[in-house]
Image (cartoon, rainbow over all chains, first blue to last red; front, side):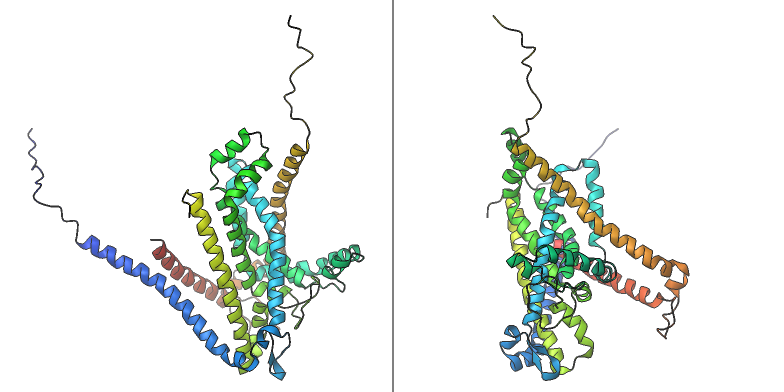
Length: 327
Length: 106
């Protein structure tokens, strides 16, 4: 049996161009167009909203950011109390969520046996996909009333202590900054946990084993090897959680209490946040009032963009370091 | 002369020290973190099912197929249009976002 094959001729170059290259280029343009479209939409949203908020910015000037008087019938639109409410509830949420999220992510990465890891991740994912309106309704219907009793006890316990009696103040409300903070904490915990888990897993095994070889306990290994390696990524995860907490609308609107002009450090008092006031007042707003609400949206938009950009930069830097590239 | 070492057995068990106590405490915190996060999940699932299952499944499949009552004082069933609109909007959004994201990752 003879097999006659034509030997390759070095003079005839292989044609690498053709439809493949063209379709690659087309796909590249398509991908670039998709990415550009996202930026274009973001830019258009910013321009349109700023344009529609210009009348209230012109009317109120810096008072829009510095005054807490929000009185649509009098044409006064000071958004400071809503800015305070947004930041305060987000800070409460972070204070509650950070230790729990870090504990859970450390538990999954360092403690849990292999067979338990995946079920735990599924449970966390399940918590992440619950719609925010369900959290809000649960907060109003189930959580708010029992929490009011708990708040009363806490206030009674710290009544004589100077600073704490102001923070855990009197006349506790079931729907308050604290309840909103708790709901937001439950909502952002899966985000912080899953990002932290990704970051913690980038710690090289050799560094962990080196810590153990030096006689470190598990906790000392985590403090000495895992945390220094993952610090940037953990900060980024927390900031992404903060971005989510600040932008949350419907859950906050349902449980924050809807009090206008409230700037208080009393976590048990009712308040309001920027997304909540937009959701609650939009339906009955006239022209200037709508402009004021859009002004709040512009402020919120800027804050969340800044937080998210910072977070993404920190996470990217940390991930690159985890892979061994020093930036 | 080598003496018998039967009495001086090497202690392989770790001694109680502040380091080991701290390690045990932090391990407990990590485990309890997961318990804490499971509480709201279970509570929410329980509340939703306990309060909503009767309405959703009591007159099945009317809840998912019939019209919303025009007079709000009439009790259900009928969330069909809401559910179909919701699924339509979400699937369309996911479709757009999915194609956009896959383009970026490429």
